Length: 178
Image (cartoon, rainbow, N blue to C red; front, side):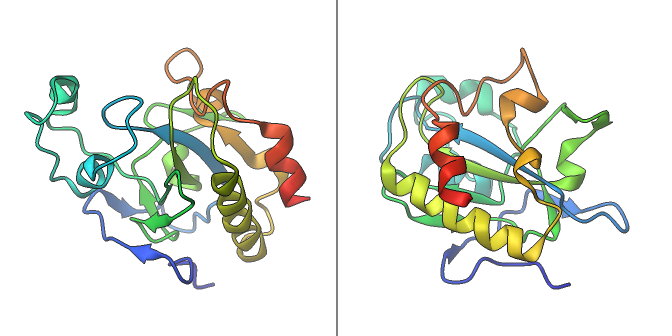
C-alpha cells in the first residue's frame, strides 16, 4: 500500500517526523486545533512551528514553544486550504503522551489533522467540508479507519488536551462522512 500524500494539496516537508514502528499501519484519526497566537488566524506562524522555523520572539505567547518539535500530517486553514506536512505512512509528532483503546503512543498508529481554530470557537463550514473529503479519502486507503477510530486530541490525552473543543460539531462532521 502506498499511503503518502493527499492529492492536490500544498505539500510542505516538516523535519518533525520519523518512521512508524515496523508493520504499523495508521488506524486512528486524531482531530486537533491550533492557532498562533491563540485566536489569531493570519500569518504563517503555524507553518513556521511545523517547519521548525518559528521565531519565538515574534510574540510573547511563543516562549513556551521554544525548542518544541511538533508536526501534524495536515493542517486545514479557516478557508479550507489543506497543507500537508508529513506523508501519511510516516509518524508525525502530534499526539504527545496519549492512549487509545489500551494502546499508548498514539503517534505510532494515528494520523493527525489540525484545524486552524481554538478549542472554544466554532469552525468554518468549508473546514468541515475539507475535513470530510480528506477523511473519506483516508478511509478509502485505510478501511480500518472507521468512525469509532476518529477522535479528538482530548479523547486520547484527557485532562492534558481539550481540542478540538466545544466549538467542533461532531454530529455535523460524522453526517458528512456517512
